[in-house]
Image (tube, rainbow, N blue to C red):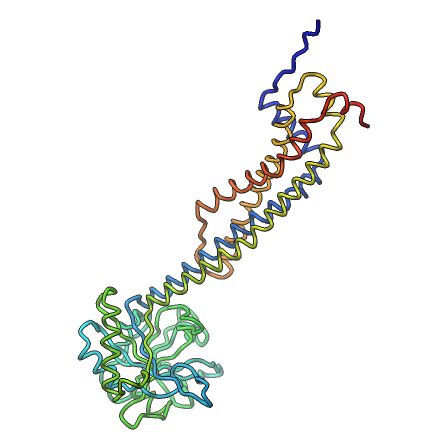
Length: 418
């Protein structure tokens, strides 16, 4: 009487045999993992970079004040083609003064005038942006001085030739730690005394807020810009700091009505100005970056599919190569379940090890990108656990068919195969 009965194999033994099988073909195992490594690393790095860029932009906009409205002049049109915001002079300094006086929610209002220009200090020549500002600018733009002082009201009223440097200009001409007060520079050929330096504020869109020099608005209008409106001092824009974020829409509505009345616009005429809400900018940018991140991460996820196909192919080849081994193991008592578990274990180990390597690689890539491009390093817990889960699913799906094929082999037929 035959007392032979197949017996099950402990999970620890299955894992040890799976590890031994993978180590016996190190190069093939590594190449099989490569698709999973690239896929997981790409998803984590792209997600992290997207979140970091989004956070950096939000911080920059918030540093300017999310309760700030920007009013721009209208758009000139040539041949029916718009020349862009601010291409025509439809705002004057008095518009800012009237907004301050008649819009209840307007806490601080500041007008400005700007244009590109050249500044010279000794032998250094630097192209920058020259900005004429009024007395309310620091509070409206949430910026502070790191050196010196701001313009006095008398200097503003008289248009005195004094200037405050943006931090980039300061670094370019002088360098950290140098006291600039009392130094003189030429701005568009005119001599100005430096009285202060603004703190670093970063970029606003394509504009480096630190690569600027600031002079009194009246001085800018009369000596640099030289193009006043017939009805007053023309300006390129007006900042309106609203006393509460909840009142942004209210303030925008009131400013729109006020300026339409001041500019004598009939109901049928379009606004000859535009208003930009910083909160809307944040929300729009966040939505765009979020969609782009998801899209690119999804494309990177295709690598995971490729990696899964690679694992399945290698495991199918492995079943064919190890047919005799499977026959011997079945002959000495291994069950179909044990064979299935071993090949599944090999597939899952490949995907999980590849997933861990990909996760670490992705984090390192994201960290390097954050340091190189100077944005916050952010890794979400969801992406970490998601990468582990994805690699597990890939391993299971890729290993099912090869494992079933191995488990279904008959011992006699397997032993006969060379």
